[in-house]
Image (cartoon, rainbow, N blue to C red; front, side, top):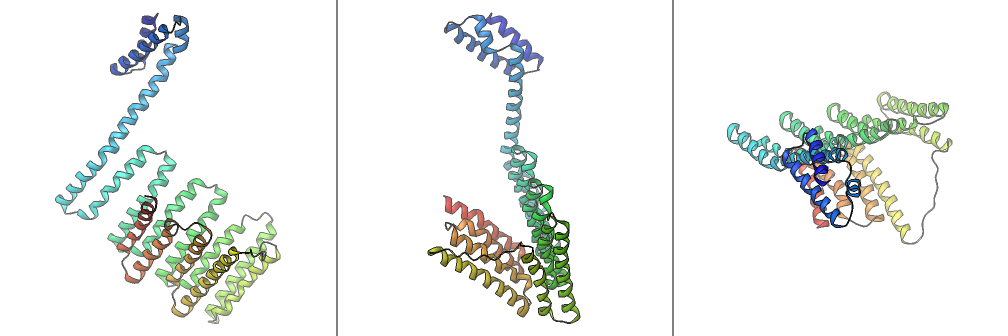
Length: 364
């Protein structure tokens, strides 16, 4: 019975075009399993049921063989990529003096690993930092667009949102990034920092579109449109932007009337109260400094960074202090400030390396 069972298994494996080496290995393993079962006193019929029908066994094993072969090929490609990258780098360098930007070929190492080991959706998300970095460097070195080329990094979270968010919520989630990109382009190329900041009002206006009551949505949207129109009229026609800003009382009042904005003062007691005071003070200070820099120094282009104090203060006050938690904000400030004030966006992007470095040091 053992010989007959193994012969049937061999025939089925050959039908599935398994290699001779794989067939010999499988038959050896199943022959040993058969002998072990006989040694335990089992009958041939019991062993046949225990091991399974030869065709079904072969069908299951061939999938395992294919997966194993595919995995081996994949791992070989990943393991070879560092050497392939070095060879390409040396050819570009010695052959065409392209040491720079030839060094970018080393990005093929992590890119290959991601492609070979990740499903499509997660691969796209994981590859987005490399794609955006390459695009940013291309914009910078070839077209000297370090600023506002850095906006390309916003596509990293945007791609993740697009792939992981329902269509209904996608526009709301994307609106802060789209508004920031529009604001920076309007400011950089057309010097419209003011009233270009009005694009940020798209964020609540898009959110309002989810309001179930149509009349309520219409009134709310109309309040924003009226406020914006009044602001632009007072600014461009009357040259009085400050008075125009009073128009935004209208959407705030509308929100209060509809009950969507409530003022509740429930100050905690004890040490937590002091922390809340500090956070509220940081918010007020950030707004004041932003407005002062914008109005007095025309610093709308860089004053937005002051708002990063708010999340940093919140992390420090209400969470366990960790350098890794605040390092992204520090990196953003260093990156933009060095690039904007010293005109070295081609180097300031290195500030983002502080994020993984901080994580390594803190978790080592």
